[in-house]
Amino acid sequence: MENPENNAEVIDIDSVAMSIIAYGGDARSYAVQAISLAKGKQIDQAFEAIEEGKKSACLAHNEQFSLISNYADGKKVENSILLSHAMGHLMCAELALEMGAEMVELYSKLHQQESQENTN
Image (cartoon, rainbow, N blue to C red; front, side):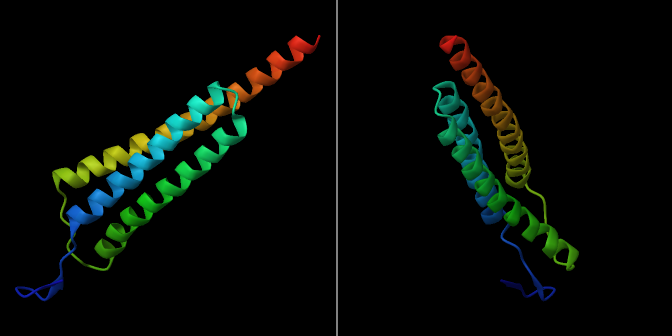
């Protein structure tokens, strides 16, 4: 969209922010799902959930990068409360994915150890 006042492109910040929130929410949900699956000894499915979460986080990062790229190109990118919320939401999703992946690894090792003890 063109801004007639200064002939500069206006970025729809709210739309980008909502995309980041949606993709970040999906990523966090996959992380929580992965932990639940791992706890229930569904380790392969848990790792798949982590991978799906990473894909969602990547989509959110692509949206974020579009803002950075536009800013670097000299376009005006204004901050908003919604954008600030989106950035926080994405950071929480990233942390959930990192911790979720670690927990899946731990549950995997725990379940392997339990299996070995039960065969002895």
